[in-house]
Length: 133
Image (cartoon, rainbow, N blue to C red; front, side, top):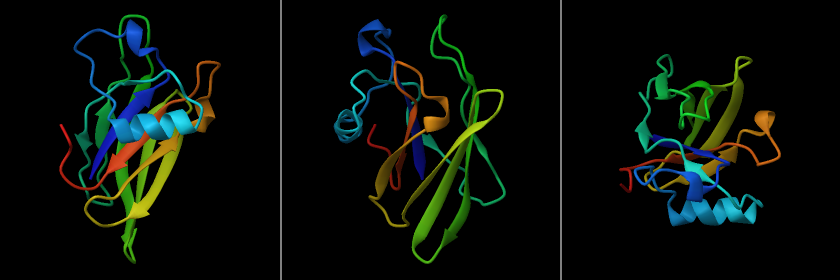
């Protein structure tokens, strides 16, 4: 299980070493009306245990953009479905839950709509299987 955090930041302003946004993620974001985005993280593996969280992102994108850290875990895995929970971004702990089939190749994106700004909102991409990087 891997997660990637996507922020509503113009990719033209990112440094050349920033992580890529895969085409399937970009297509989903564009369908949702998000035209500017950049990956804040690469593919981060989650611990996979219901009682163990993983620090996914330290909250820093660059010198100008800073958020609170984000942690993720898998609170539920049953009946062929898996629930992924990510919390952080703000001092009030915005959170997003992603539900998907518990099988290799499953993938999904979800918006962190609690912290929407005029630029858009952060998204989380979830992938079961080896990361594409």
